[in-house]
Amino acid sequence: MLKLLIEPYCELCGKELAYNELQIGVCEGCINEIKFLNFDNTCEKCSLPEVRKFCPYCWNLNFAFERNFSLFDYEGSIKNIFFKIKFNQDKKKRKVFHR
Image (cartoon, one colour):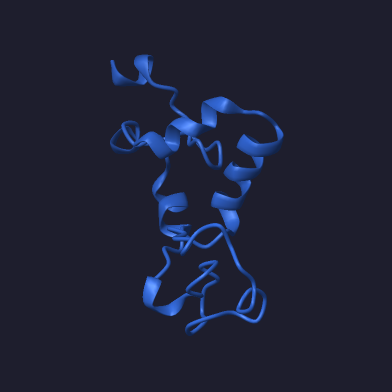
């Protein structure tokens, strides 16, 4: 019944979802691919990973905010979904982040 109410495909890669993945809307493979960032090891201004304190790109720039907090590295399936939301105007993909 759940498969009839929810689209049975991964929102990130399009693979058919297993029953236990339906509520999330993302397959286990894509979830395991996401690299969550450790805030102790990112730039204090832009969240560039693998940087102590400030990165070489923005250490002397002034921003309108104190600090950016990125949850994950912008690569792989996450990069693809942001690209689809931002440039293809695929608004349906936003629901992944609601969950």
